[in-house]
Image 1: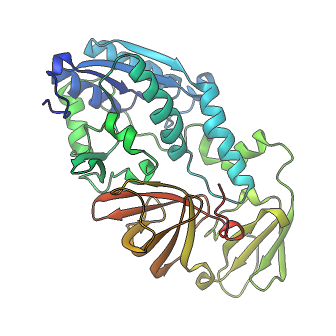
Image 2: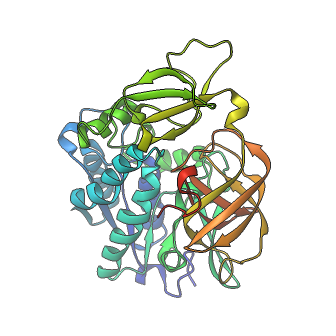
Image 3: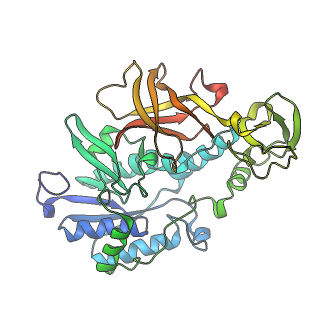
Length: 375
């Protein structure tokens, strides 16, 4: 059994590495090559790399493709660039636009992992005869009594398990995450030691297809004229202002409301069908229960019908909080929080944890869709 848990000698084990051109995936490829595995690097062209080349701080852009090729050349491994632009647009960008118009706050990185990377790229890796697909994600895969399990990274500050909750057990059988036990500074140290040409490259910051964080601009470009003006109302339904489209607002937002009020107001919810933005004081943001749809379960057997105690993460930067969760019809879940939380935003993920283990998760449903758990 080699270090990847595969019953072959490293030299006989073919591993495809998803190489984004950043430090993490480059070190992943380098460490596996150093360990004697047969490594093939694959970089995905996901969108117009001509425009993206001029914008530093993104990922999967033209410069990144060039950097990934430089690293592969330095390591002496084969490297291929696959044009997944059409798949990425359909599975990620179009979904992003539709979610914003529906009053949600989407997480395109989860959709990308769920579709383009761990469905399409994984299939390509199998077609190449690979024994595993490795990525530079900070998360741990452990072999449990019932099969592979997904666990938080050793470096909790870099943990990316929230973005991987939709990974299936079948995909986990094939996936490997060599950086899961490392801290970011250790990864950088490996990059320096191995003299990788990207050793000092900055981490990506923005969503790759959203220039300068302008989410509304992307949605407006994809769905011209779809963002219609409407009323801003308080929680009692009184009109307190006007807006130029719900796509300009997210749940929990405080700034940019343009409303004079004796106390700070926050976006409490969005009602896209009525073209309304509902605002209220901070206590109005607190929620102690929510519905989740599209649940992916990674625990033992099936998700239990009876409520179980877990910890849930409602935003990527939040630490997990105590809750109970139970399955409901239609592949959803009902989540009851021990303490009410602010800014529970539809379209974000609700991820379930048992200690360090990821039990699964789903997408937070809108209030007006909670009964049916929007699919």
